[in-house]
Image (cartoon, rainbow, N blue to C red):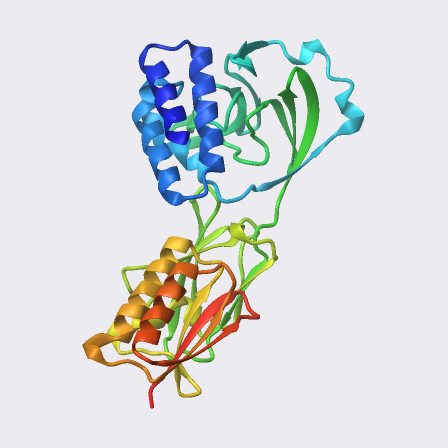
Length: 372
């Protein structure tokens, strides 16, 4: 069904749809992308969107930015409706917005509208990469010393939470608070957005480690680098509030371990050194051993592709040279790495390795190997 929807939308786009139809096509693809539960389906939609971008409402230059918006892992804002002001929104608030309807979906059409405060320009547009309908953006004023001129940078989408499949416009900034209007089904309401705390801190337990440094890159939900820290056998460091995604590199390994804060709801991201380094450091002769066991940790915060790749590497290395551990202890989180753990259990059963499986009471799946 999904493939037929995509095919029909792209066929329509190839026949030269109107601007209104193009907006609806992209809107539907975004909805289908959001509902997709398998990564392979999402990857397929991404490719279809990128290939069809010239025929939609976003040109090829902005194609990557468009699909990156769909991958934003979390909202950077807490948004609430301002009920006391909602009833006072009049027609004068919408000087450049007119409603149109295509195939039962209502949109507001807007020329790019903007207001400036100090060194930032706030825009509302439906011709830039967005999340559907009219979205709001900001563009900082940047000084280029080499030409001695100020220029506006490319607009940034405020992302999920503020922008939706409806129409957002009329954004104003008051200190750290944003106010804006959202039009849905012909009704306009006012909203207030405040910055959300994504991560308060990260705690690292390095008691098992004989590695001196762990390198931490800090990115926000738009994959923009906002900080970098080096842990020197420290137990805790405070991170910027907007931290969303963290990439750990240990032993100068080329393959990082990526942890995504946005997939969970707790305020503190707690990681063990086994979540971060373990087998990636084995090639350098560094192992993590506790109580006579070789320990491998896989945090639920870790990006699924990263953790799946790491676990498959552990399984492969576990039977190098035909040898195998004599006993294995697995503490598994329900629903976490299910396929990979089941594969490991099948292999261990065939090899008649003693396995003790229990439920984990922490936010990580742990595999501990014992060599007698």
